[in-house]
Length: 182
Length: 249
Image (cartoon, rainbow over all chains, first blue to last red; front, side, top):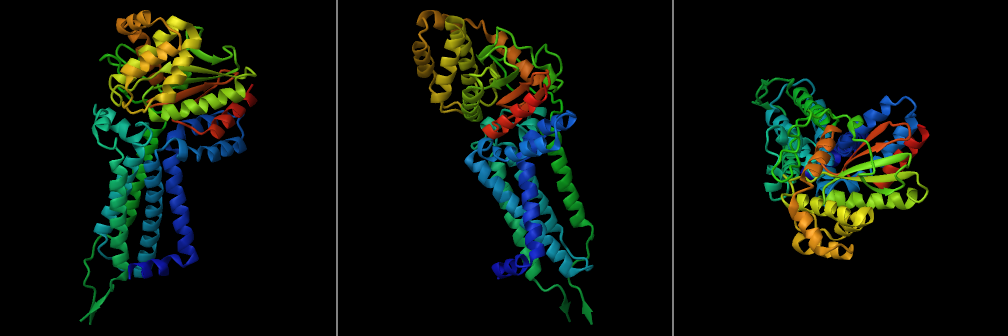
């Protein structure tokens, strides 16, 4: 039943495109986060052309293979795809119910929870290069990373779990009858 | 009569959720950029890495001037210098070490690029061992000069299992032997603690330049412009950056 729903949604070119765009955007953010400083620096140097910056940015996508472990690269891609799917399903669902207000609390909360958890996990990928280590260090808890059995990559796996659950909730909502008659 | 049986809740919930997610991404960007952070990563021999040092500015311009005291592979007067702050037990440093060797194979002989190696052992992630190997590499340099340093360093990154899994009690003496060092003098140096301050200074400079993880590098162009290199970037990206820096002169 759920697979059929997915087929219905993603068979439409508009939703398939939205899915790809959102997934690519999330993946790009995850890959480019450590390189924001470099790209910002290049924009500040007036003599560096836009073409050069774009070429470098394209090359930086290769850091998915060098700046991530196999595990973190895998869950980063999965998180991006799941988030793209989540947004697409949300848009489909909201469009289908039009202006009818409904209870989306659980869907919204678990979706945001999934995204947040996923980004925390991504942050653990490169020896604590950014988010999680920065935040933990701010609270003097950087050593926690070494203490965690998977060095913090647990957060990425939790993120996948939350996003899968969020997608499941939305698909269920799409499948469920929206109006009951008495 | 028809009626909706589902609860009427705030219709702005989903847009709000997306906004929260966006805010989170913004926070991630903030921390992922070169914003100053009171970092305490990488302590050596229980000394706070940034104790007594100026508050980190996070500016790559704070990179310490490259001198003959540095460990340099390639032409010391090369117009482009890549200053790497590295941790011997970090898996991404091992990966980036290979990348940098490829860079030097391509740009080293012509004297275009020099590779400067500085210490950034992350004590919180790789306790004891990262610092111990950093000290050993400095002692290798003291005993056998620049060649011995690079022989030791290349050799260590070849064999390290990373993430504190390396048997340093076996590997360090073996590498010292292969580098042709006097074992007794080397061991005396390692146990002396004489390089703790030097390593702490390297760590402090890494933090000052914006480094908060390893590998962290700063490329210095011919005109003195600096470029942050965060993490183990692929060879193609480093080459593109070298090309950009060359065009700047």
